[in-house]
Image 1 (cartoon, rainbow, N blue to C red):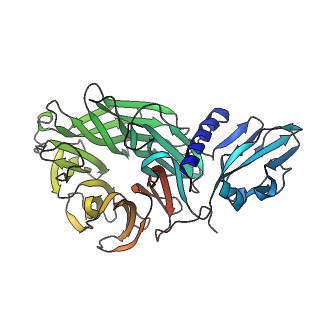
Image 2: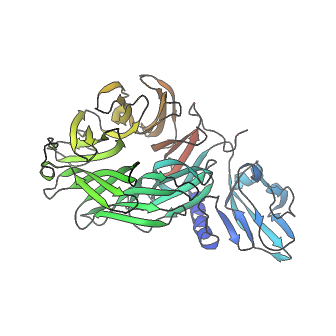
Image 3: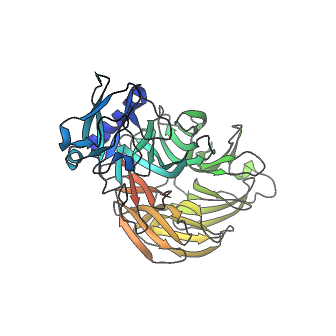
Length: 481
């Protein structure tokens, strides 16, 4: 696990890497120059050949690799090779890093610092801040994850931040974006043979009066290809979550949800629909005056609404979120939950009230969906909002859920009494199979490409935080035996 100081070192090192060597978008980060490259991170006690990092000399003909301090810190299996294998020691792990250099045709290159990670635990702390979402990736054959959130001291107006890593938690790339705010969700769009691209949604504080929502489209190298902004000086707009809606006979769409402040100061449910190819967008502010056709018969009469999550159904969408009859804001004690059934044109067909705040909806098994929220609430519903089972644990707040690969269990993350919590519960059951505490708060969960689980949030030291656990919710080794 990284200390706060080490997290800062890693971030600075990544920025240096971006300047010196760049990043391919699908391989572990390296440093060096045109003649050689050294990975930014290695795992103690394991040969570098076992987890897809490379020490490589690309120029010259004669090579000699060295570890500062000698074998007590690590060794190269054959230091004269162009691409040697390296093994760091436990002594180097205690120190946190080693320094490595190579001599190419009598030219001695400068030492490069390499961070040492512990193989016994897949708990990784990155920079100061928090991750709000995590997504498993299989990009150009490179399996891993993307975690997105914010960088900086929590509770202030920070910058959006994301990390792309492999399944062992080694950084492929990371980026702090030159704007305020934070990412609340990330979605992956697969392009076979071309490298994936990603949609990230969130919002930022413009000044003491206004907030602006944004959606970014990034390519495989984390470069912004398209940028969409809503609100700001024109009014308060927030985006909390999104999905990529696949279309058989037209372009795919990004559907993102949040809320929108009206002229009277109230907040209405808000949906943005972006054509992935053309960039054309439609905004849907769910107030009665905006929709006068016969399909819109529901009035949002409370002063505050916020859509937190949305999922596609066979004939439209289901969205969940929060509402308050008299008070504006998420954290009021009397804030409750709503589920909204929408047709394919985002017309409201049904609203269902819940006594608990609802934070996430995901597709489950047997044509059902699962929703999670405050007070440990988890329920299975169908596309009409009919509830089939539910469970309540008073001291828990559930923020995200994933359905396991065989469709029989749910893995849910959140917070319990000041600690991050993850539970595993069988579909239709009211009893937990497993329960563990990690970090201070867990906001996101995804199933990794190797069927382990990825948990994201922030640590007790308020660093952005990813934990990789097995089917029993126990922390796994970075390189498995």
